[in-house]
Length: 362
Image (cartoon, rainbow, N blue to C red; front, side):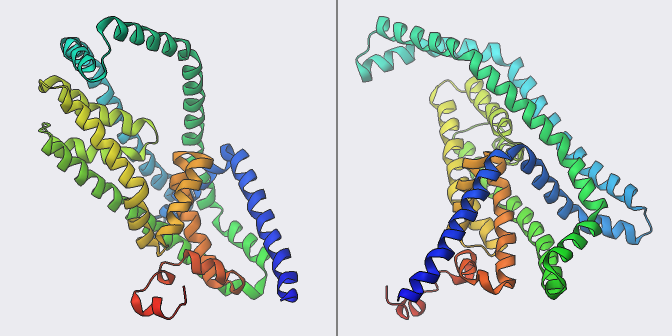
């Protein structure tokens, strides 16, 4: 027992030190690591296409340029679609304002009936709320500007990093081979091949997630009687690819339509509640289970990665930490010293039914 403690405590402390140092580096190195890892993700996805084009005697720089250009075009198309939606929303803003003004007396009456606040108290509360919002507006706009500048920098650097990864891929492989030595050459090749396949499964799983979310959005909008429910439901789901503003602007469209076309204020409120509930399901249920199944990751570890990534890097962390976790699982498949971690990450090591449960005394 004493021997076990003597071996266990130093090992545990080393693991804790490694985790702590890694978290500190990831948190303070967000500006470097986020575009770098997004670039690696794009490079892994583009590698099979680039390799195929190079087999057709395309020059490597030209093949990389074409593939990266197509990726940028797809993203720009989504961005233009988002701007188009924003213009429609701004065009309908006067109608929305008039509609809200028409509903104002009914809202005041409903608040008084349910809370006992008279009209003067409501007006004072509203003025206080507006005053507080105005005071905090400058700091909010400053943080929004900083976030926008940071996002633009990341978007510019992603294709640059992806192109460099693709062009110098042999150099990076040689570096890894020299780092791990010739004895792990076969394992390293297998890890790299499976990592590229893992990223493909990650994208496929993410597509299924957006599809499921789009179906749920469409069903909810149909039940609320919103025109073009399927179009808005699918569009709102796939626009979440663009962090932060994607869901806000795309969700504003069905809310606007509900305000303009419906007499009751409960319809736009219902749309907001619908998207909030579906987004909660996506983050905590759908994404961990669907993507975890595609990558053969346990739902528990996937959910922990999503939460940790969101805490460290926001939406970018939620996207990036899943494939990073999948690569860690691939490495733990090959390295004998990481088998204990592999048990936690592997989906097949989870609950297997009564037969498996009865063999464990717990």
